[in-house]
Length: 320
Image (tube, rainbow, N blue to C red; front, top):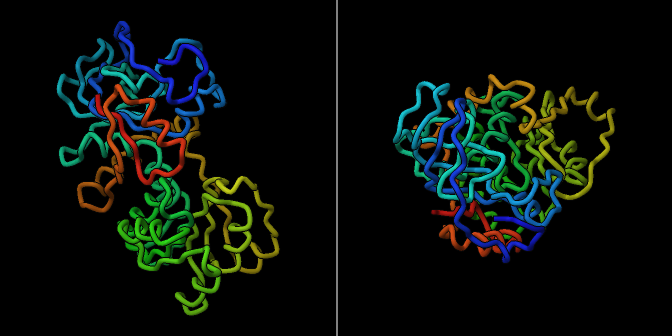
């Protein structure tokens, strides 16, 4: 529980009353909770959302339904479920609106379910809805060992694309390879532009997935194909690029924004469609979230500390 702004290592487990069940909600027994960097920032008071004290962090949960409110038909105890909640995930129980919960496939582990609700929908919306990526096309994924990047590699392969992945160093490239990337480029060792053009016989990549921004975006426009689509996912480099529109015109390309977190407000009906699409990919073995470490709930502070060190790969989950 967070009762003051604190460093991750100061986070401690406490006994509190269970949250009340609302009519439009379900109560979930948490079997796994995903850790995100936003949880670190929220505990320190450095996140854009600052909940009133005290609060329980944690926004990604997988578990089983304990009970459903009177206004939440269709749910029964024992249903396997995942959800993206605002707060409260680092607990034994959490109450969430029934409309924000989704039934997990029986083949998906709770740990994998807790690793899915944020990064995979971002990449699904980008590649399935916003690009859209077609089978046989070439997809270039930057930062392919990161959360959304690895998800993009898997989803791209599940859609029948040839995937070129960039990452820094052999360890990260191995993560991209295991995710299914066909071509690996260490951007620290060589220019990815030349590699992409060589791998596509000078044509360039049909779709470019860019969570980096900065110079990476500018250079991506040098190796994008005619009618290509550049997906703007984020700016991990810390620099928001300016785009020269003459390049957009000359190659007939599209610059496409992807703002997944706005979908619940702007297009709420599509959220369920997204998760159903992801679950179908999971059933076919097309996607498999990488869970790199599991911590007991009592070690939530240590888990967030490991995440804050930025030395982790894949998802860290808490297991009550």
